[in-house]
Length: 427
Image (cartoon, rainbow, N blue to C red; front, side, top):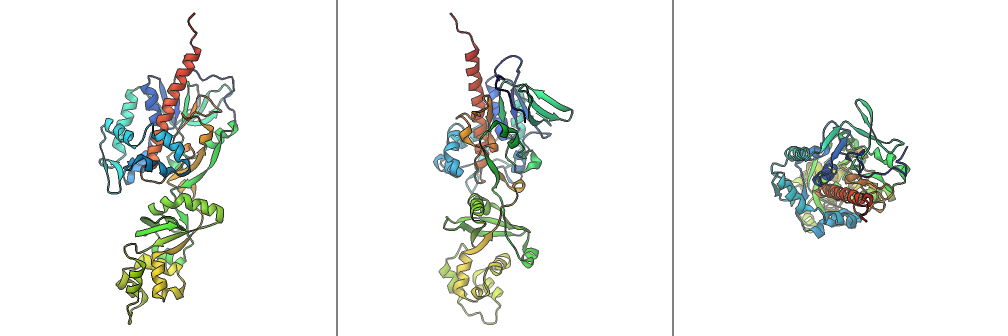
């Protein structure tokens, strides 16, 4: 794969008319907004027919922009990359995101879970207002342009409906996403384009994803596509987290497991499997459950006894039967223990294309503080193609906006430095 020759200069010459932003998701659009706001011409390229498709997809269940919690706690949601993401959030964090939405005419509110949504909870009004403002600022959009690398001259090469097009740019922001939801434009193909330049990359892996569970045929037939509500879960000795799960033909998915997916994924990679512990009766203690289950059953079946005494039936009762030994089901003490901590063996995570988001990508070690590639001056990276991950709950979107904001300012500052270096000194 041809890379920009070392003697190609990405400067402010008139033959290089615009900054190229490749990727029309939240990170790329935010970078374009910052760059256009500095008076620089910007062209946004994307392989899809329209901008912001993944943002619209995120808004189907209610667009969760960010989260209402202290910034110090917010930053911890990014795990091993908390320090790197923290520097981005200090430039453009949750409060700045709320104010930015307000300037677009989109009011927000805090939900019961402390998640922050636009009024109406839809993505389309925000995206329409944003694209209108970008066009008013002079940003030009080049849709159905798939980036394919570089020409020997250093020009960017795009595949379009009309054939191959080559473009030179003052600077470039790569905001190509991870590899989840490839039908919306993020397929991870950029990894091979950057590899010849020896850009440090971590392998792309599924994040906020489901996991395979080996169900019996009876369980799968009866309970597939059913939700598990009012449940808590944890991995090993980790903290309990509340949420919901969904049974699929091949395993489990849902918000509760998404929150645990990073740790579960690493355990599976290291040990070949992981155990999800489920508390099926979070409103009662083990002692309370045991006392109620010790009441005489009489002629009632176990299923009837569970339903009458502790309110466990249907899917939750099915889970007990799926993973408990028969002897445990006959002991009130053992049964109470299983209700509070039922071990569910997890296999491999669901495929990357099925994940909500992506872990891995361009490592921060290969980037400057303003997200410029150290090995490719003039090229900046933003969004989910960077090596970080976070749980759902507004954390993903906030970091994408923050990285786009940082990369945009990085472009502006880098071009200003180039211009200063090219300006002859007065005698």
